[in-house]
Image (cartoon, rainbow, N blue to C red):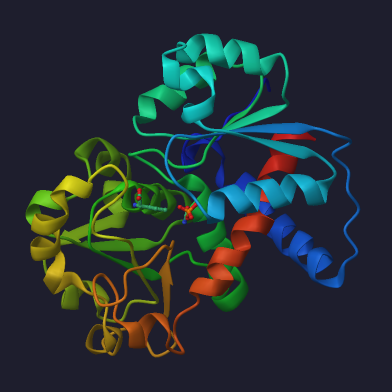
Length: 300
Ligand code: CP
Ligand code: NVA
């Protein structure tokens, strides 16, 4: 097979994703025991960030350093990208200099175009439509804590956004039931839903979504780039907050995830995110290990 990209979760098969998660668990153990053997021999990851980031930037940069490679942070403010150099040209130039490119941007189409012109693997570090790297960490976290997610019930509460779209992809690939509770006007895109219709239930009733769920997930109500809609979004999403009452409807051993950053008192109450069922810190930490496994998969 030729060069592989990771623009959505569907770029990998179930077998590949399961192997990647198992490898991430091994890399995590080696990291914790300080027994990692770097095998990247100076390979370089270019990282284009057109939006802010804490976890994605630090996890990719740390991953490359720990694997024996390097990462270069590129922002539109101080590269020619911000002065209008075409995506296609940037892709062809970077391909001649680095071994892999990670991009966080707005339109998903830009990533697709970049990948078309790139001779090296391209990773989606978040677009307006998808956040597949976060799903690697979420699936690893569930696997470590509860085992196989196939056949389980996952409740998505809130916006039908990029994270929700990647959960829809995951439901189809990993074979879980995804119950999405969101206001009518913030439902996920039909084009994403259609491919996974058998695994998805959409409702505007958060209680129904939470009933007996094994995993509850939410995300910010206002994503990056939507700041001007914040007031109306706050109103629309209020009934969809994950709080103790909602958690009490879930299965006894249910866990709570959030990709972070979180807004306590908005999409999640403080007692839930800081409570015993929350696994958000483990989830965030797994960004490092699952992305190392992804980089190995694409580069070695
Ligand atoms: N979850 C996530 O992608 O976090 P950052 O925006 O901090 O990278
Ligand atoms: N949906 C959020 C995720 C941030 C990691 C956003 O796009 O801003």
